[in-house]
Image 1 (cartoon, protein in one colour):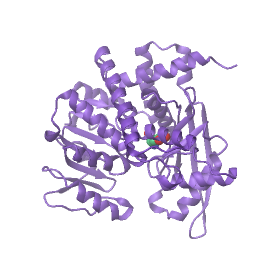
Image 2: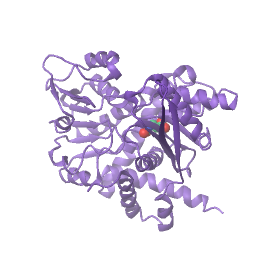
Image 3: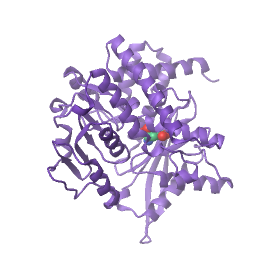
Length: 418
Ligand code: GLU
């Protein structure tokens, strides 16, 4: 049986702890979230009946700074999943060395079946339910799966109404007009592109000869596919929850983007182009490509299909798409995995820039944002790559070694209260 997501997160932590010879007391502290909150979220639905949803906010660690992490809306959200995602946020912020701890939130609901009005009421009620623990210097939410700038705008407005003033720095990923940052929407996908180019450089692989497949065509996957295509790579497969498309000559990414910009829920369903055939999500993962980018949900590359993966490198746009059992198989096959906490950290890095801009009430131009993002990601990539080479470990283990060590130092220096 596969582990639960939080067990998987703990395994990754335990592995790093062994490598860095982590003090067992600090290890014990890092194996538990600081705080878990579960809330009931009653919503009056459009037809008048009341639905009671369950929401969570988990603050995994605040030792290096305020907790930070997104909020997801999905029918499969569980406390276990949110705990794992909150742990991963902690390591993610540490590996790129931004001054945050880690958190995550989620509401178990099916946003595809809800109206915008229902989603707004859900968001506002959930916000009030977690208000006792969030705050611009305590815990700053952001978008994640099925939440967007619009959702963040509602959170910002709800908190502002309660405080009786406009509070910009309570949440990141907001609309630009409400104190959001230029480049934040594209930041995760842009980061995926940046690390992909770095790893291809190390492999001596020419961009023109690089074939890419992307699973998930949402905020992360679509931007990554578009930017890699612009950089010269051939994107031969893309997919989302409705299925995928494959064109060995390279898909017409511009045409796909035009299609999803007006399709229902921005999904790929019904797309067609000459030379492209419909494929399943399973088939997409097993395409003969150089780069595979899982940018959807957790647990996509497992013990079951790892052996059939043909990519040379996997860039984890999603959080937790590869199980530890699968990673062992991939590593044996010589496949490089650039782990989620590094590969998809572009989003939280630009969230950090947004928060800094909100606090200063002084906004940067897009060049400044993209340059700073690139500098942070290229440096972190280099640090992880050279540690992995030096210690002869995977990039995931190297990332965890760096991240866990940074958090452990903070725990040690702060001491244990009281
Ligand atoms: N939800 C994104 C992630 O998993 C972004 C989090 C943030 O910006 O705080 O990294």
